[in-house]
Amino acid sequence: MLPAGPLMTEHRLIERMISLLDSEFETINKKGRVNITFLDQAIDFIRTYADRCHHGKEEDILFRELKIKDLSQAHKKILDELIKEHVYARENTAILSEAKNKYINGEKANIKTILGQLEKLVTFYPQHIRKEDNDFFIPSMSYFTKEEQEDMLNEFWEFDKKLIHENYKNLVESYE
Ligand SMILES: [Fe+2]
Ligand SMILES: [Fe+2]
Image (tube, rainbow, N blue to C red; front, side):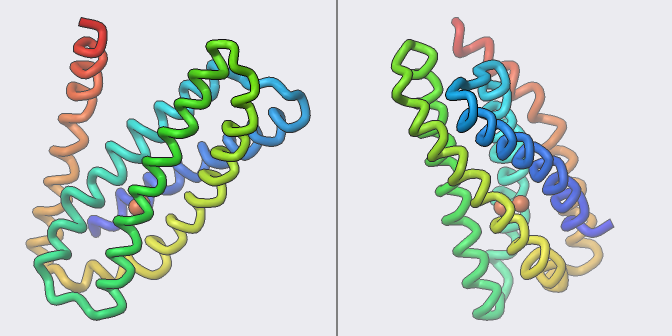
């Protein structure tokens, strides 16, 4: 298996969550009410799965290894864009989360920000995923030898293994 494989599999689950967020956007628009439980869990999904677990493997492993390769100008350009796009996703998720917290605290006008942020994320993720799937991941594999690809996959599995422990350690520490 190529290291691009598990990353593309993760894209499919992210797409399903984005589709749920798109439906939630429509529901909020129609009913003027936010499903707080769902939004809380969706934000956790974006932060823990899409950002920490998925973007984490991209940035901390795949992109780190690509940066020491002699990339073509075109691939270097896409790599820089992808890194900036991860920052964009993080920032917009933070704004969504803050608006959601204010909404819970009774500042109902924040529903507008929630809608705006949902729209941004629902538009952003499919474009970002398309760029990685169609223009980057597969060609980027050719910079690595079979052995390097194998090492990368192993590092992916190690990364995933540590995540659940890191996640719940952070939870406990946040309450201590
Ligand atoms: Fe990405
Ligand atoms: Fe990705």
